[in-house]
Image (cartoon, rainbow, N blue to C red):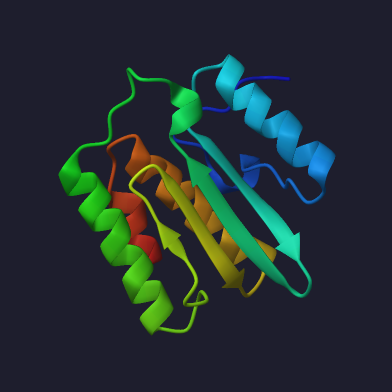
Length: 127
């Protein structure tokens, strides 16, 4: 399987619905020492997942990026776009209850970019 670009465009964010798909995508991220990003269908809604651990100890997300990502998650919860049980880092991010695959992919790609230091896509996605 080809490496995901960093940051990953929305249309390439993997759908990891199902245990086998999640495990395979996570292992791929570990093998490539990359930030894990994926979407998963959970009933009628979608979940966004991002994890920096597979990127290894050399991948450091600075405090300003983590603060911006957490702020974005808080705004998404306040706007009702994700459930209040969202988990906002600093290493692992989960956004439950996203309405639609396309929006989940957009948020996943924006969060992935942020975890590589580019906050602009996240800023635009959370307006």
